[in-house]
Length: 137
Image 1 (tube, rainbow, N blue to C red):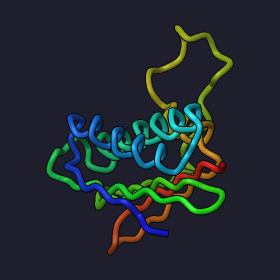
Image 2: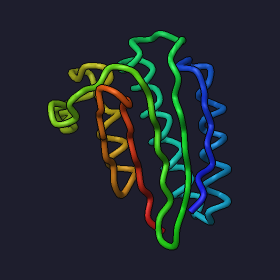
Image 3: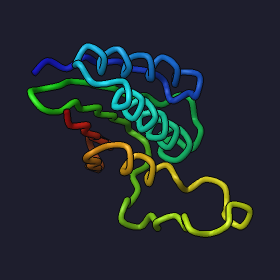
């Protein structure tokens, strides 16, 4: 297992580079187009959350992106040094409510969990935050 890595700043302008990186790695891993799109969308949501919440919109942070695959799964891992959060404290979005009555946002974690087969968060006060998302073949 050899991981491809990309390091970008915590700037929304870096998102196309990250998504292109994940797309290329998932294509090389042999994922079907629907799974490639799921990985791209989940990564976009995750990076946006890192930029908006972990780094509070600051563009001077760093996001490390690593991708690898083995026999039956493709992994996207994102690492940052921003603020940690408790994923268990994030309420499930009210998907059955009328769109007009729902607040904007709050769907990122839901999308990541819906699009990927596994989503894990690890928070360490010294080494930082690591998000690991797995798409199985």
